[in-house]
Length: 399
Image (cartoon, rainbow, N blue to C red; front, top):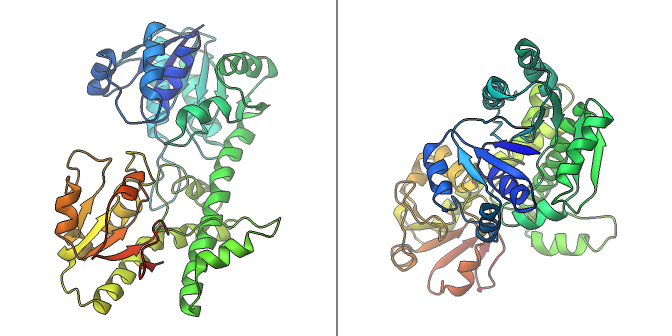
């Protein structure tokens, strides 16, 4: 079976490579010519543990990249699915565009798999009408991605997967393809249930994080250590409170719950409040920075260093990161000096690429991301605000 994966970003590239490395004939497609050129010249386009080795295995199996879809038996679409900030509804334009491009070249009866996370009902509302107009009659399937940057290869192999299809027969065909690399349980269901289940997974985590973030603020007012409170509470066998932090980033947890809020505004009050709580955390961090500056007689924002630009530790993915949210929300924060060991090219103003220069130029270090690199660096002599509870220096400020 020939497979064409559409979108070669953080989901599409590792999916393409693991399929190819496990005996499937795979062509990857991306509209970005630079990405395609790099891949065809044996250059991996982003950092991820094990991705380079997987790329070598995939290349031996004939993996190539193109800027346009090709004729294939199965298409897997992994393009972004943002939401519209005013309405909170999904913006399906990238998925719709990818589907239209595929329909131009596909044979009738091919299988069209949407891996992109979508709001419940998106395929019926936005994709089926396009398909019906084409007279190509592809088999529609939703198999939402379920991987985490920093552990992509392991999660592709070991995580369970969901395949939503209109018929058992088609679901079984797709299952056999995913079984070539996936050792986790593969659950078969209908398309709308698959859509809802993926959004619900990330919404559950968002609500749990919001509770931890709200608890951090309560404990601060009460003069308590939130991390100790959570540690003790989690000893209960049915309690599992996550850790608070400076906000929620990435393209999953910070986006997917809005799909439900947009579609069901009267029934998602808890979900909506959780999103508001997590989105407010960068502002809360800024307020704490101002307090800490006053306590330590630091008068210039340019003497504040932000450590971490990515949305989580040990990845180079900056999408929706709390640091970017902070810089976008508050004008004064644009004076901060920014450093991230995984972002090796200058992406924003006041970004320092050398840690030594970064640490010399600031008096207050704000830890927004707990990269492993930080473990080998000295912060002695600096005021430290650790939003991730990642270091044990005395007199370190916490959330």
